[in-house]
View 1 (cartoon, helix red, strand yellow):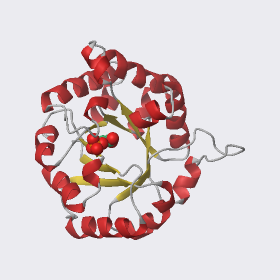
View 2 (cartoon, rainbow, N blue to C red):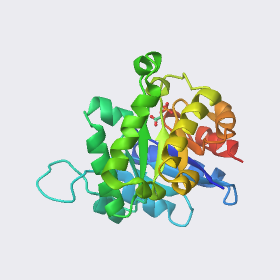
View 3 (cartoon, protein in one colour):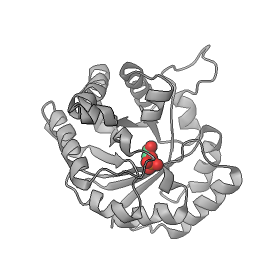
Length: 250
Ligand code: PGA
């Protein structure tokens, strides 16, 4: 049985005061025996402080990005080993905002995935199509290309120590959630594609859905056979909203 994971991607939001209020709310409201794992992904400067604050709560901490480089003359970059030292266990790679706004290719994303795993971080690999690509009937081709780049880089076995997030770009921050059926179709496609290479890796792999998930639509999504949780943007910034999604998993 795959456990549901609810992950918050805070993006470029937060402050010491706002983070404290948000986390106090989540800690107070999260039930330790709920059948759901929680992960928060704040901006870099807050990671170490938040990891300290969350120690012993069972809530995991991840970064939103990582360098593909281990060290050296790469101004502005942050290495996977540094994230580990900051208390991270996870890191997002290939979020569509990184791909579209910062020009990250599937090859770069695959290198980041590899760098994360080399430091023993669990990469959360984000893949998904734009509206234009969906309307052109290219959804499966696009997610396959994004997934295959990683499999080519690290091999299918490496996916066993990772998490996938299917995030249709047209659903991110738009309020236009994919229906549970639309999401399930793509999740099933992804799992079957991986099963073609390694059935047991495919069976164990958690595939999250992301894109305008909220308390009111989470239960329908999480009830689908191949949806194993959510990657939450906007609704991860308020404790009540985030907890409502976590509760939907129970
Ligand atoms: P959203 O963002 O929940 O605000 O749509 C999801 C994401 O970008 O991970």
